[in-house]
Length: 325
Image 1 (cartoon, rainbow, N blue to C red):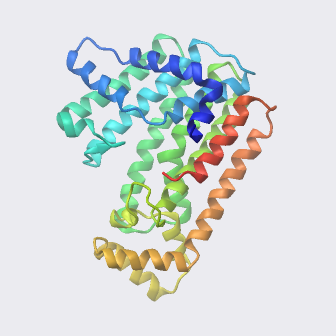
Image 2: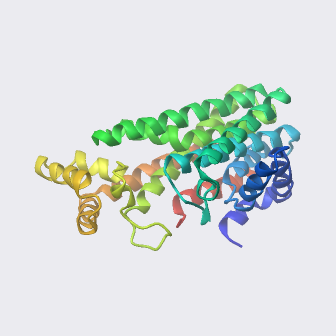
Image 3: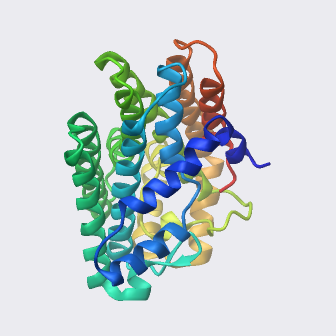
């Protein structure tokens, strides 16, 4: 049994029931839409986000939850799927999790409309059931994800990202959705505001560690399904690079910036930049930052009594920083 399956064990029944509820939440009177949403359900990923919703809900309520938690998980997954469909259009991407993307199969116009449909389904699922607190948590996440993406685009043009801006970008782009999952998990079982905010913080810390780990993949030699140096080719400023730029001579800095701006498609030059980052402490510093966020997440969990759900969340933290893909 792989690590994700082990983490899922205490909520296995709930996850199986969730899949059916999630499928039902996408139903439409338009046959084309149903064909596309059926395709979306079939190519599901690890389903980490609903797992966060369920594990947090169970941990803070000592094991119980009802329909509201299932709706919370469905809202998260609907809105997350909508953003992925739109992302593939924005990035002009033909693949998603090894499958063809919606825009590759049905073209951009349909993909954008499907994304809009999923977004509205998520909003209506909350409104129809008067889950306004859950709707607020997910709406904040959508706003922040859009802002983070735009901030990254703006900064990539100038390559002038500071460490603070980098953390702003990843907090908004990646961490905010995991924060929403954990906040929704707590809110769905009637936890008080302090607990909801604490769980949001917990999700945010895990999300930041998750993204830092992703950035480190760009510098690994292992076969991980994505080629190394891809962030440099796309002129994305990640933490190993930012740290190195802030801790080298003016001449070296000019060489790195020039490499990224003008030679980002030159394989040899990209390898040289990766080697320079590795030799100048960029990787060690990034790993220490990732472990720092891991510790912050752990310290929040320490406030809760032992339970199978807490144990799974602890495993989830380890998985995030040790995963190979």
